[in-house]
Length: 485
Image 1 (cartoon, rainbow, N blue to C red):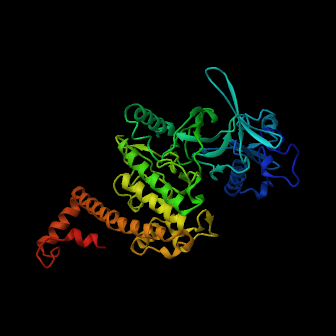
Image 2: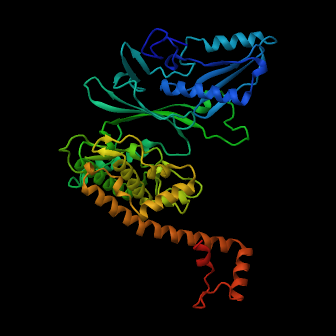
Image 3: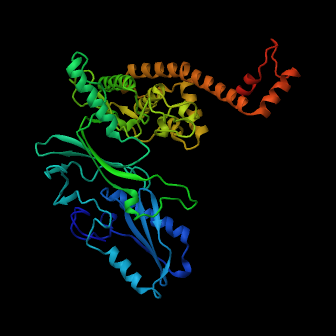
């Protein structure tokens, strides 16, 4: 346990103890009762809660301790790195060093981000310009309620709304990105560049509608640096992607679309977001992670067209002209509940129509889980839960069933008739367009299997020769037979 402005608001130890003040959890067991697999998982649970309660943590140290042995664990965005067990009686020097290390007052070494700190009841974020060494201090709004991911591994995204000295709102986003992906600001700066070009050359067009921009960004330490050169590998020798910490400052554009104060505001925001996707396509940018959290609504009811709704979070975005744009069967990008059926099926590459379909699923989710504009319903309707199933077949079937029979009765009357009409129209569009495309891609995949597999080809020829692959018209139909299964 610890007390410090970097750790928590309360500068006294809570009673009972809380994870808000936990610096390095220790699991103490009798040697005879030690079950390494179970106890290591329990340590991970403790570490995860430290990350959740202390969003300014880069890593969490933890240890397993018995009356005979000790083992040190480091939990970070790559997972769990741990030492071997050592005997605390045979190696007391190492034991004392471990305890001293876990008790250090240097909180940065214990994984705390020193830019984020408490002063009384307020929490602050401090930046230092690399060029001028100018210090800027922002006040964090609602410091106890950031947006954060509740997992140890991965991006570890944390977002706060912060305010500068003039009271202007800005969004602070902290995360860990892999080196295989282009950073989010690459796309946001390209959007800003296009907006500047339009202002000079085509002022009548205005900026790209429905898309966020960026004010500043900064990159920091690598995950591999936190591990002091230890290889990033799983126990079965699979390579774990190295990551790099970064933060961005982006304009505050409004609350989540589900918070829209009226149906009209909600629909106008959706319109701008879809328009923005179309213009991103012209810039050869695909978002690839559209969800309810990534669509915002401008709270100003008098906002101009193009500024009424916004698409944010370009962490998973990709350039259309990138040679590595192959998100298909090997990479299902996005939030499961809102992924297109084609992406779930692992067919083809992720494209504009997949982003549009994700927008449909996300907006349908919003209107089916609301008891009116901006009023969240308690619980998620059973018919929607399976959209996010980890079983691909279940998720695919749930979405196909919705397209075939849109459950608009789930939409509360307070959302208005126009919303029901829109959902029915969208469902019909994707039933006719997206599913037809899936059938074509399935047939192409099957044909590709035939061409690559000589044995299958010979079997198909044999069936045709014996008349087993012919339909009533005499045309070979082995492909159709297989595809209808």
